[in-house]
Length: 382
Image (cartoon, rainbow, N blue to C red; front, side, top):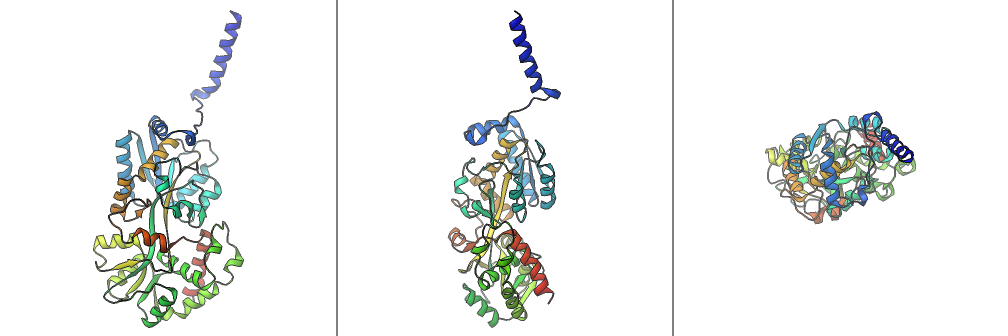
């Protein structure tokens, strides 16, 4: 009798530890060893998810509403500036449980997040269709190796946009582009890279062709001074052609100038072109292509935070975003192209084969930040 009483007291004491402060200590589940059906069940048991994004509010909230209806999981979308969100994540990263479940990631925040080790995973092989997502973006984003911790959600691509009534033979190689600019003064436009990504695409291309290629930068987590020592060649060339080119203040200003007939050939984003075509602020005959010399593209990804309170629900929502119907709806709604390569968007300005053949990855964020600052100093302020 005494022995039974003692065992009961021990078990009661152990139970008290588990319920310390009135809260049960929940064992962390290993979702990588679970089937997808088990993850779905765990997500429904969690019952809620919070997702952060910095743009496309209408699309994300609609997607979350539909997700909630499908799975019975309470979803919340928080719209906040990307850097502010990253600062919040970093401030909470040492807490056992944070306040953010999943987040859309892009730009220099990719490197910040990967370096800080804030993401749970790798997760790309946990979700259905992970093997059907763009292999370039699934491996490298903004020049950073993401290791499967981030899942491609959509892609965007830069290229050359032109008026076919004024450009009969658009340039495809570097030498052809240089010759075209010289033969058609003030008809080529790109935006200040400090003000828009299409301008960054052009400056990166200039750097690649004049300073020894782009492969040497891949995977670098910090700027190597030796690799930028000859970038003066790029600034010298850009200054040389300054009188023959037009530098705009934004991605949209470049499109506006093309639409108004002020220029004939510009650097542009595919999603910006779609949006302007849809709004009627760009003439229907405009043509976009990725020249054979290659132009950079990428996209944005989503990740689950290591201390997310609802990991299973986060995995389920990210997987939901990569479902075929939702990929197509996103393309129709916000113009960004599908992250999946096995299906086609209804609004496809560029064929998948061209994206894979001529699209190149962005150089790492430290180099991009450096060339934006150097362009302002060595070109804009000359």
